[in-house]
Image 1 (tube, rainbow over the protein chains, first blue to last red):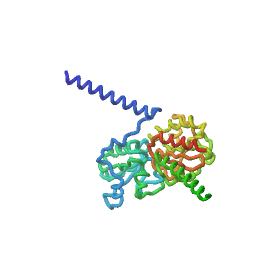
Image 2: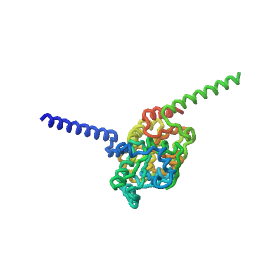
Image 3: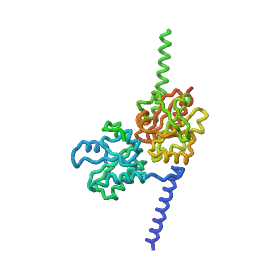
Image 4: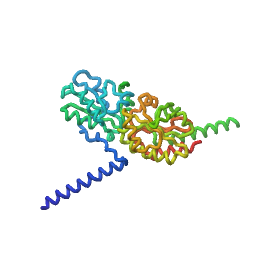
Length: 166
Length: 172
């Protein structure tokens, strides 16, 4: 009996927390925009730091990853990680279709690194849906580049190699 | 005697410059473009009217690079609407530049947020003119003299931007 009461109280507490979180998100985006997917939900073990990716870009063979930008095409055109390819914005259904088409011919064991860099990490709407798609497709060696602020600050300003163009 | 007066005047000008620089350094990021003439551009806004940056000389311009996928941008934009209403009569002009790939999404959000300032689509050329728009939000403040006076990258403190804005509005 006591256990049931505890369970009911726990369920009510969780519902209250979820409801207030939802209200806070909608209050922040006053006009009722859907909250962005959170990059923070990507497991830490799947993250790659910029200096590590820079090192990996210089190796040859199977350890060299396929690097895909899954954010804004306009930002990609201005500047992107040298050697990376555009694969569609992960926050848009058509972007995810583009990513799916891009990886379709690849082995599920391919080493793939996703990145965006449009916004501060916790605000990025693109990397989490892209990571989830590859995971759901069965790709087992996918990492996400951790960009704390944006591509300019965390990659370009550090002097790591970049290219421009679509 | 005349040399002393000239030296004192130069000293005062240097102190005033340092004071202003210290004020702006408190919140804004430094960037090579700040202090230089704002790169000129012309665009058609969403209503079809022409935006010519040179035409806003004499006003303080808040140039906001944003996109529909940028959550932080959408937190800032209602405040920019309020500033345009409150500070517009004192000489503020907010201009929005969408860095979206799809103009339809930008138009829809601009209408939804009831933006009361001109908004146009950007592109990589405009981004490069402004030192590279490689992360949003990105906000520039342009003084009445047409020079870039401050740059805010990422989630900036809106109170800091407002403080600097009012300093610029107070300038002749």
